[in-house]
Amino acid sequence: MNQTRRQVMQIGAGAAAMGVAATAGLMPNIALAADAPGWNAPLFEAKSFADVAKIWGATPTESTDVSIIGPDIAENGAVVPVGVKSNAAGTTALGIVVEKNPTSLVAQFNMTDASVPNVATRIKMAQTSNVYAVAKVGDKLLYTKKEIKVTLGGCGG
Image 1 (cartoon, one colour):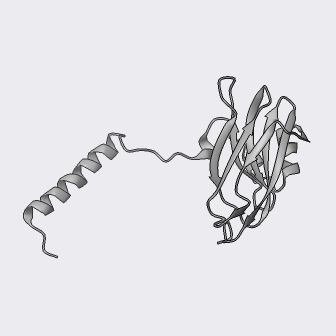
Image 2: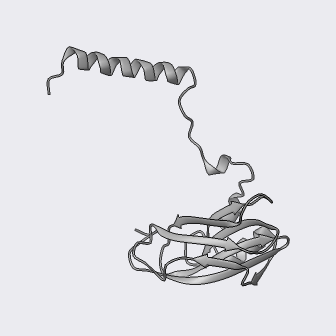
């Protein structure tokens, strides 16, 4: 494809502007979860709900104060919509644990007193599994679970 002189000059000017921005420190940096304050790597390496509870240092108790919203059948395991809500006063964290995923804890949301403990996200599921909605309240873990069936590959492809 033949380019006009004007197009070549525009491309060159754009590249020069990017070079100046990069050397001036104006280019965005990559944000990594591992760099976040309070990141707990062993928590996201846990292989089961029991391991997550042990690392959180809390006793798991099934409770109606925690609810989970999600489909009965997920058409695509790569994007499963899940919501977690806690009605328990003093909730400091919400979590989503997928029993049969390679790493069980798929999401953790830290709460403050000003937060409403109600979150929604999309998760990746390897296969049909129980999904736990977890709320950390003091030294207890309140949870409820729901089986979500996956019909198309998620974590494994």
